[in-house]
Length: 354
Image (tube, rainbow, N blue to C red; front, side, top):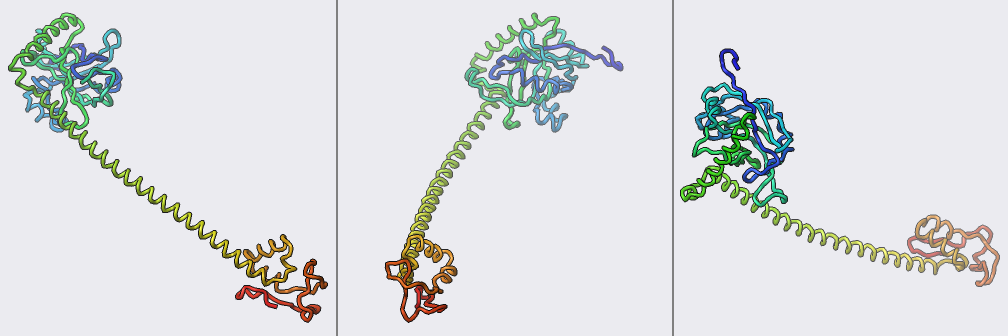
C-alpha cells in the first residue's frame, strides 16, 4: 500500500493466546477484554530486546537509544476471537522494508509489552499466577529471531520489571503468525521451542542467569522482604490490640466498682433517710401515723415535699378527745382551744415541737 510515496505494510496476526498458561502466568480473557481498545495505536518497536517501559513513557528517545531500537509502525484493529483457541488478533502496520523482508522470510517474532498485576490462584498449578486487574498496553516489540533471541512461548511470556511497583511488565514473546501460513509457522515455532529448551540445559546456560531470571529473583527478594515487614506490622498490631483489650478490661472493672459503690452509697442514704424518718415519726402525734396509709403519705411528703410536710404537721385543728387507741387523740388538756396552734415541725431539729 502506497501513502504519500511511502510503502505501508499491513499484516493480520495473532497477538496473544488466551485462557492458557504461558511459562508462569495464566492469561484470562476477561483481562484482555477490558484493555482491548487500549491496544489501538500502540507503537511497534523494532529491536532485539524490550525497552524499559517506564523510561519509554518518560523519555521515548532515550529508551529507544538504549536498546538501539526504532518505532516502525503501530497496532490497529485489536479484536478477540473466541472460536477454537481464544486469542487476541490485531493488524500490524509498519513502513520498514527491512522488517517486511524479515517477515517474508519468516525470521521475525513479536512480543507484547504491558503493565498488569498478577495474583495467586489456588486453582492453578504451583508457581503459576493469574493476570488480574487493569492491563495497560505499552508497546509491541518486533525482533529478529536467531539462536540468542527465540520466542519463549508460542503465546506469551511474562517478564517482571523492578521499576514497576505491584505490577508486572508483560513481554510476551510469540511469533507473528499471518492467517495464510499459521499452521506452517506454528510448526516452525514448535521446533524453535524444542531447540530453545535443549539450549537451556547446557552447562554454560545453567551457570549463566538471564536478565528475566535476575529480575525475578530481585522481585522475589523484595516480595519476601515485604511479607516480613507485613508480618512484623501484624504482630505489632496484635500486641497493641492485646494491650487495648487489657486496658478495656480494667476500665470495665473500674466501672463495675464505681457502680457497686454507688449502689452501696444509695443503700446507705436510704437507710439514713429511714432512720431520720423514724426519729421524726417519734416526735409526731400518734394520731398522725397510727394508720399505715397515713404514715406512708406523711413519709412521702417528708422525703420528697418537705414544705408540704411542714404545713401538714405544723397546724392541727382541735379534735374531739378520745383515748390513745381511738382515731383521734387529745394532746395536752391545757393546749386545746379553738383555733390555737398546738405545735410545729422544726426542720433544724427535725422534730415536732409542741
